[in-house]
Amino acid sequence: MATLNDIKILLKNRVGFRKPIDETFEAMNADNTQTESGLVYQDAHSMVSILYIRDTQPIEDIDDTMFNQYLTILRESNVLEVLNDVFQGESEIDEIKILGNIAAFDKAIYLRMVLKVGEIILSSKRINEISYFTDKMISQWRLDLNGSNDEGSYKNPNFPFHSGYTSRYRREVKYIKTLFNNNEAESLEAVTLG
Image (cartoon, rainbow, N blue to C red):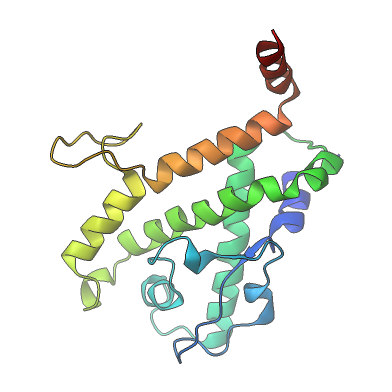
């Protein structure tokens, strides 16, 4: 049996950041670019950009070493949030079962980073100082995060149905919970067999 922190260590390198091809951040360390699944956070949504994260994180004149530390903490806390959502209140988790289904976490980790970076950007005190963040861009990102006429989102008759990242993430968490909750998995088998 393992704790959430033990499982976090197993999952923290499942998804990583792609090193920018421009001069945005040339000093990104190898740990932050490591991806065991082949998924990179920047492919999840355009807001998950090293430039955007760097410009909206709390430390205004952050150096490369501290920014690498910030990205490492961001990645690890992202994984821990996924684990907390899946294993709410469980103190011991079956590590063997996790290892057998490790790829099941990839999409949830990937999608959760979009929500996390969205929170960082939209709550940044410096967002108004950054000229490339337009009101239209921010509005579109809010729509992308929350969806429109989607479960749990605001209802707007002027927008068609748009599945937001929040509900997509919730679906992934529900799927993982089903995989790891024996009672729920057994009841699903009984329904499908009956």
